[in-house]
Image (cartoon, rainbow, N blue to C red; front, side, top):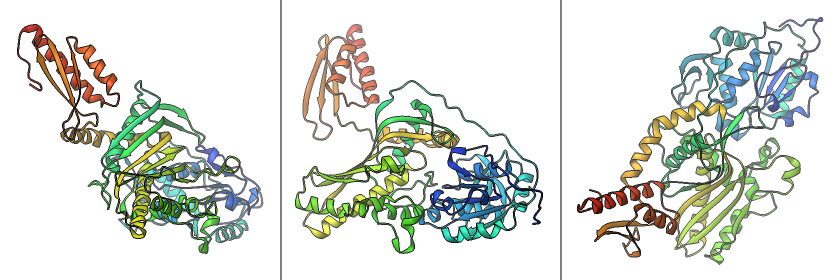
Length: 507
C-alpha cells in the first residue's frame, strides 16, 4: 500500500449499529470480539483508528460488520482481537478471520435461508453467514483491499495499530457501497404483556415454546442497540426432565452444540482465569460474580447452607452489585435460588434481560450444570442424596432481536407443531382429571388427582358454560387446552340431555 500526502483524515460513518461502535478518523478497524471495546480505545487516540467494535457471533454480527466496511472504503487495515475464552467458544472473530483467509461460498444458514457461508478448515465449526444480497464482487474486493491481522492480546492489538499507523493515510479502495437489507416485520396477535408460564421436559422443547410465545404476542420495542426486539415481560420457563448429559435434537436446531456448552458452562461454575489476565479483558463472567466478586464464594455458601439446613429457603446467590447502576456493567443474570423439597433440588434463576433466541439455551444449560454441581457437592459432603428437580428461569425482559426474526420463524415452522403433537400424546395436567357423566337432567363432574385418582371436588349443574366457569375458577392453573376440552365435553353432555340421548365421555 502506498501512502499519500494529500489525504489526512477520514470519518467513519456506519450504516448499521452506530451506537455499538467507537468511531474515529483513521483507517484502521479494530474488532474486539467479547473484549469490551473501551479496553483498547483507552490506549489509542481517535485519529489512530477508524472504528472499534465488538463481535459476538459469526452468524449474526459479521454481515453487519461487512456492510459497514463496504460503506467506508477508506478502512484499509483490520485488527481482530481473538483472545478470550468467550471468543473461542462463540467463533465470531475466527469466522471474520476465515472470511479474509479462505473466502466464501453460496450456501444456506442453519435455518435454511440462502446466504453466503464463510469457508473454514474445520467442518465441525459453525460457519459465519453473510447476507446473499451483498454481491460477490463487493465481498471479493473487500478481501483484496483490506489487510486483516489477528491479535491474541490487547497489547498485541495496540502494537499492530501503532505499526499500521505509519502507512496511513492511504487511498480508499473504491466508492462507498450499500446493498439492500431484508426486513422481517412480524404479525403480532393480541395477548397478555405481563406474566407468562411455559413448561417443557427438555431445554430444547421449552425453547421452541418460548420463542413461539414471544413471536406470537410479544410487543415490538426499539432497543438501545439500533434495532428492535419483540418482548414479553416476566416470562417463567420451567424445564422438568432434562437428562444428565443434555438432550440435543437430531439434526440439532438449537443455537448451541455440545462443544460450545462444555466451555460455556465453565463460565458459570468456575471463577475467571486471573493468571492469563482474563479478568482484565471482560467486564465479568457469571462464575466470577458467584465465586469471588463480593469476596465470598457464594456457591460454597449455599452448599454448606443446605447441608446444615436442608429445607432452608435462604440458599440464595446474588450476581447484582449495587455499583452496577453507576458502572453500566450490570449482569443479565441477577439471582439464583436453591430449594430442597421432598428430597428434590430445584433451582430458580432471575434475569433482568434475556435474549431468548440466542442466549437462553446456553444460559439454561449452564445453570443446569451448576445445579448438578451443587447436588453432587452436597452428596460428597453429607448424607443427602438429592434428586435433580426442575430448573426455573424468570426473565423480566424476555425478547428476541429483529436480526433473528427470520431464523425464529423458520425454527417455529419446522419444529413447534411437532413438539405440541408429541406433548398431546403424553398429556398431563397438574390440576388433575375431570370425569363427566349425566345424572337425570344434570351434568355431574368429578375432579380427581392426576396421580392416585383421589376425588377432590364435585361440580353439578345444567348450564355447561356456568359449570366450565366454576371449574376454571376453582382450578385457575388449569391448562388452556384442558379447559377447551372440558367446554366441548360439557356441551356434548348438555346436548345429550336436551335430545334425550345417553352421554359417554370422549365418545
